[in-house]
Image (cartoon, rainbow, N blue to C red):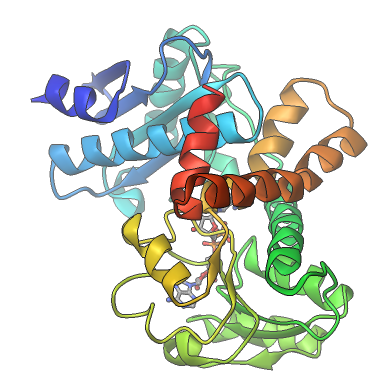
Length: 337
Ligand code: NAI
């Protein structure tokens, strides 16, 4: 049953599409009826069931709606999911068919990269529709890292009374498109940085160029530091890891950092400040949307740096309303929807 699930999440629209010729099966979820267009990436995944794919589309489109609102944009949240194994089912015909699906939505949904959909794949979709973007890839991730740095400044001021990175130690989990430039930006600011990645080549690449420490991926939660920056997968703050964390701040790019919203309160009980993920990781979104709105690079960077002020407002709201930072961030976004 789709409508009850939509009602639970507050979603406005869910559309299912299939195409005999290419085998395409996909779902597009749009969160808000009155904030158009909906923006959000498209992912491809070999879901165990249609229900699991629908759940992903609903969850991710809602998260995008909160992210765009918190970042000060009028656009709403959307998400596309393509059901299938990216290793065997993804080809040009399928991506073009998906491009036609997006085009058929006549601009109500604008999409780009996400898990298992690369900038090259988006370029292929773009042969069928103009409602795709973000094909510049790396720069968006670098700007996501810039936004995380801005968010960390607000967190440092909140915890230590100064936004200086001198003498601050940050542990970066995941050295991918965001984690690697984040580590570099932090080193440039005089920060002590330690890194962890399951892929040793990523660690080797960074340590060859920078004086950073290395942490075993399994020991990352036990490593004493000022800031833990999760930049890999989601749900890393959970019942098992909260008691282990040896940091004062959790601020990173990963989406859905908290296994559940209650883990923000669990962190705060331990005196650890949590920077809500969708606020602190909005740099790439701001760059992508800012580009389509015709903002200059300097204007985009200024808007990304505003993440610092946005977080300060959220911390004030947390104090005023006596809630966790996660709840305060949700309310902050809802006020702007
Ligand atoms: P990526 O796929 O380029 O990099 C992820 C890295 O994490 C990989 O090097 C992987 O080996 C490593 N990793 C995975 N599990 C790990 C673990 N348990 N311990 C240590 N390392 C691990 O991903 P990307 O683009 O850098 O994104 C990172 C996170 O930030 C994701 O959660 C993503 O959803 C989020 N995000 C990314 C944005 C972007 O601009 N790329 C924008 C907003 C959020």
